[in-house]
Each structure stands twice: as structure tokens, then as C-alpha cells.
Length: 332
Ligand code: BT5
Image 1 (cartoon, helix red, strand yellow):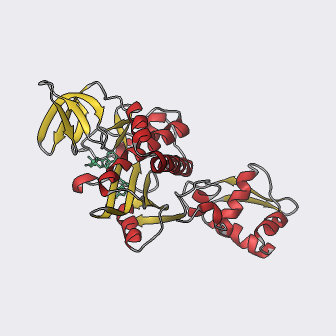
Image 2 (cartoon, helix red, strand yellow):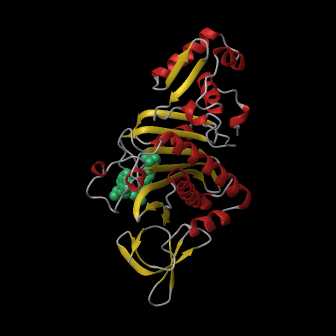
Image 3 (tube, helix red, strand yellow):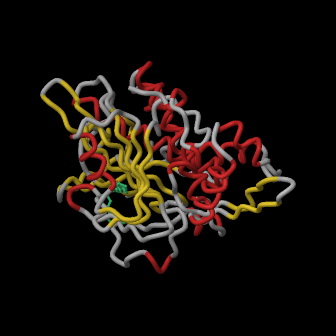
């Protein structure tokens, strides 16, 4: 395991960090050069490459450099600058396009990459949902991320990490938009009753040991109504549609990673209990009538909560409490 704060940041990341310490002010070339231990010419080269990446940086000879505007593109330096996470984001890979960030994270996991790796893509050509379903992943609008973890837990416990991602997404949504999202078992986040995020965990394991878990997280940030296909299984929305204005992909991503880092520490120290409590507080369907489609078999009843292993508990009309391990839930 290697920690973010022990690494020397890359020059572009360090320059962005200096800007973030003094927002709306000029940072002199001399200061950047001294802090990074690089020449003034090297400072200028890094500033030029940041500009090429879309950063609007003003340069005034007697005053230095000022960051006027950051682009809404996801770059490792911008995501990692002063992130303050213990594990998550130890390495960040931002891709213009990928088949699926989950597949890419699994490839890294198979190659022995350390935990905390984050893969982010601008678009996915084969974004994955559960059971071979497709996740719509257009370019430039949303967040598609996968996080590689290597927790010392039994394979049986790995699905519990989905609840962690769901709570983290709700907290990030509240922090960025002020809107209260809710969770839907097992892997959805809803805003105004519509699906705004989907989660897909994948795992590589032996009988009694997890090699790695990949937390796959897709959040509709700035997707427009016309970008959703018509045949979605559940009504969908995006943060921008719900809020009425666009959100910064960068801000959302950073806050989400910080929330995941906090919850992951909690999970490792205290087990899944506190995460389940947080998830249940965000679930509006508890105590309500639901219908669960379990691969064609329909179960109806009142959702009573989560079992200790993450199964959904539904009390049917006969009074029997069913434990459900896979299925799609909707209000009855
Ligand atoms: C999920 O599956 O909700 C899991 C989605 C996980 C996506 C992330 S993106 C980053 C990472 N890399 C990947 O390749 N995947 C993960 P499920 O519950 O099976 O829902 C899939 C269904 O949601 C589809 O069959 C559609 O009906 C609907 N859907 C597809 N794209 C959507 C979108 N962008 N927003 C809302 N609903 C969508």
C-alpha cells in the first residue's frame, strides 16, 4: 500500500496545488521555481502544457501567473492536487476513451497494481451494467470511474462494498448540489425517484481470499435528456437536469474520492455495520411496498431493510421474510 501524501507530486500537479492555495491571486514564477526546485524555463514549459490542456492561465511579467479558469476535463494532476486521501487516488489514470473503466481496472489489478488506483474515462464504448447490461457513457458529460481495492476480507464480504459506493455518491451529490439523493437496493442512486448513478463491483478472488475488488461508479452529471435512450429499465436523470445548471466534473470527482476514502477506512476499521446504517438512512423504500424482479420471478411485499450480509429483506403477504440476493427493485 502506498500513500498519496508520501509521494513527491508531479510538477503540473504541484503548480495547480500552488494556485489552489491562493485562489484568484498571482503566484510568482520565482516562487514556483523555488518551491518545485526547477528552473524558470521549466516553470514556463509546465505552464504552457497546462494551457494546452485547457487551463486559462494569465501571465504578467512583474506579478507571475494566475489561474483564471480550469477546464472541465479530468486530469490526474487536477484530481490529485491536495486530495488528502489516505488510499484512494494513490495513482490516477485519466483516459479519453476506453471499453470499460472496470475492465481496465481489472487489467491493472491482474498486473499487480497497488490498491487506491483510480481509472477515469471521458467516455466508454462498452460501459457495463449488471448481468451483461449496457451503461450509456457519452463523452464530455458524466463520470465513469473504477477504483481498485485490495481489502483483507473474505470473498463473501466483497459485495458489501457496493453500499459504501452508494453512500459516497449520495454524500458527494449533497456536497456539490445541495440535493438529497436516495439509494435503491442493490446498486442504484436516485434523484427525484430517477436513476442518477449506477454501481458495479467486480472481484478477483480465490476460495478464501480476495485478490482485488473494483468499485465501478457511473454518475450522470451533465447528461441531457436527449442523450438518454428511450428504452431504459428505470427512469433516469442527471445532476444538471435536477439542479438546472451544470456541475463541475472535477469537483464532483474529487469529493467522491474523498468520501470513498473516508468510508473505506471506516469499513476496514469497523466492518460493514456503520456503512449499512448510513445506507439505510438514505433508503426511502424501507417500510414501503416494493416489487422485486428476481430474474423473472416476481416477489412483492414490504421492504424491511438489509440483512447483515447485504441481502434485501422483503416481508410478503404471508408474513414470510424473503432474503433476496439479486434482483431489480421498484416501488409497488
Ligand atoms: C448499473 O447496472 O447500474 C451499473 C452501472 C455501472 C456503470 C459504471 S461506469 C464506470 C464503470 N465501468 C463500467 O463499465 N461500468 C461501471 P444495472 O443496475 O444493471 O443498470 C443498467 C441499466 O440501467 C441498463 O440496462 C439501462 O436500462 C439503464 N442505464 C444505462 N445507462 C444508463 C445511464 N447512463 N443512466 C441511467 N440508466 C442507465
